[in-house]
Length: 268
Image (cartoon, helix red, strand yellow):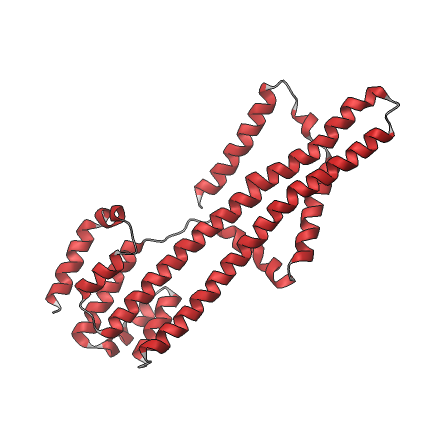
């Protein structure tokens, strides 16, 4: 599980509850079922109106990604790419057919199969970049839905507040109920702001960060595949792919990099 997502939400809720208790309030004063129905029901209704059913069906699966640990190690991907490059350089592109079934990443496997089949480099690039664009679209759609829900939440909070104020003004002759009715009216806005800034916006940002990491990884794999197809020296391929990652990551994998460099040197 991606601990930072859950931990961040828990810390946010804990901070809010602590602030309420420090102010001498009781948690029951901040609970109102009608306010919950207005905000959640309104957000869900507007989201259903805004997006097709197919998008909404996939939303739950996409949101789950934010709570899953992402196993993306670009230095490991580069090492794997150099191993493939060494095999291709020593034994030829067709020799990769024996190892392609062992590859776990479907994107990389598809690209290598296109190269083994003798596809032109521009065709390989075009097919893989098209797949990349579809992946980007899927990620951006999910992010857009969450950010739109984030904008709906405060709006419905305000609607609930207006309803509460109308009810309060309608019973203005009963002065004893003025304070409690005002409090209930403001609770709805409170719910809307919390949902927007603790749930929907952070999840949208998290999915964007995860999506950016996945796209960067696939761009690295694509560049490596095209370099292998060109028959470039594995040492030069490593240097090219290292430009995709930070110097800190390169240093952390220094021993593997050195080993990979020696291997590529022997392949010349």
